[in-house]
Image (cartoon, rainbow, N blue to C red; front, side):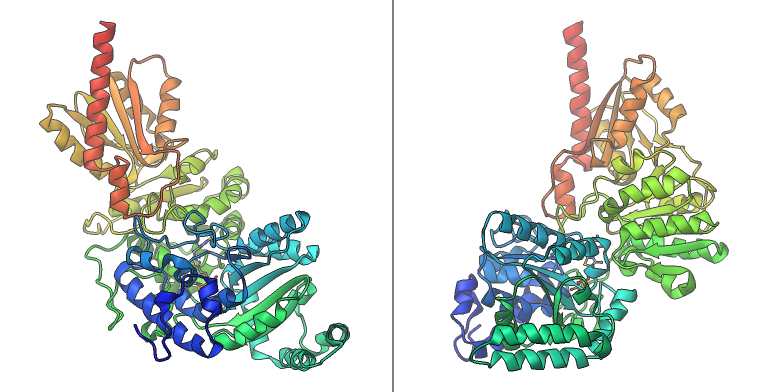
Length: 637
Ligand SMILES: Cc1ncc(C[n+]2csc(CCOP(=O)(O)OP(=O)(O)O)c2C)c(N)n1
């Protein structure tokens, strides 16, 4: 793309190239970046609207700061595409979020300009103040910037960071990228507070005028600013009550227009020499510059492949698990007024938007606050409500302690719906939900389940609400179900019951959740090798179906467990621990699951195949296990 004044995005491969440009050229550059973003994301899918919103901000940051010496920590990290484009990774965008391409989140392995791995919200201020503290102790002088969205600012960790940073007095710049949106419209008191600042700019206008005026002073600028600051301290509560950030030890600037690169550059430059914690409030529009995304920022927060002209994506043939879950939740809640639904800023992703639209008075979006979501649910359960808290498996990690202390220790009937469990693929290691079977199973009183398909998901949800005392967790994967017709009637799935789908002679395959259907396929492949396998749907990970397990241990010499979870502490571990506690049966149990390493981005099915978690993979694992077993026999014999 040849620009009028000869600016070409292809020539920008780092801050140094950017700094050669004139301020007047920035608008044109930003236009090129936006076009590049839309063209890339429409063919690969990814986080479009958040990136369109930070084009000018990212350009300005790169213009003023020196990377990688200075450190920018991107909160959540989903808005780092522009940063990646400007730091020499533009060509890798042909494979955005794919194997061998550029990942969708900051990755220091990819570039030293990516200061910190992010993916889970609200960490940036803590990481940045960590950087600043170690910097000061080492006597170094690089700059540290945290860029955090108003959505991420609803997470408790952000306040822990603000508290620490504001109290420390260290040099750190927090940029609040305020677009009034989380994935959905932002919620809660803090969001209202930010709005009140935007809507009442009197104080900030006054402050900016003083700042601009003092900037023009030939001498004594700092003294006059110091005096003005003291004056401001004494009058601000009269002008705008509750300047919360200032009270927390930050010098607050803004709100400024986040789509005027020249103004942003000038502001950042003028703030460059400021000491202590500083917060710059920047107003942006999510999806800026691409009509479809501006009109529907939630839809384009993270999008599948789409047609850039129409903005439309191909609808999936089979409804996703989240939709089934949302429908079932509504159905159950319509006949049980005690059921309440809780989400941590993910009404659309979890399918609870259906609940919100139908039974809004019993729906609660608490912001990006998984820990609070769980303890809030515990409080409600304590007085007889039946809370259903729906979180992505990866974000449930945040609330581990709350699940133990606030829910399970009191044996409260909170229902946990853990979506996106297992490998998610494109979003990479920050988003894989591969630990929940382990950490949920280790909690006393917790019932842990994984349905084999969408119908069983509905039935397990129904069963969960039949339990009066115990916390109950259900994990299910990203994406489409297996395409079964919805059964109209709910059926109870007795707690701790497995389902013997196919009996066999040579080996028992104990599969859980997403691995049940691949195990049935593998059975067919094994039959061609003359191996007759039993396949069990182990939908309860805890409690195990002890009766059936005892029977299988007695009948089979070889058992294989299969799960889409890390092997450590997962389903296979529970089976092994139980089997080890039984009188010696002679059965040998082998385990197939996710190994002890982080899994990088690639297509979900590619990863699963590579890990052996596919029909072919299960087939060869079982075959090899049996072959080893025969070998052992012949050596002994
Ligand atoms: C702990 C955690 N919970 C949920 C999410 C899912 N999530 C990703 S981005 C996002 C919204 C972030 O909003 P904001 O910080 O305002 O950034 P914006 O997308 O508006 O630029 C959410 C809820 C997450 N990344 N981390």
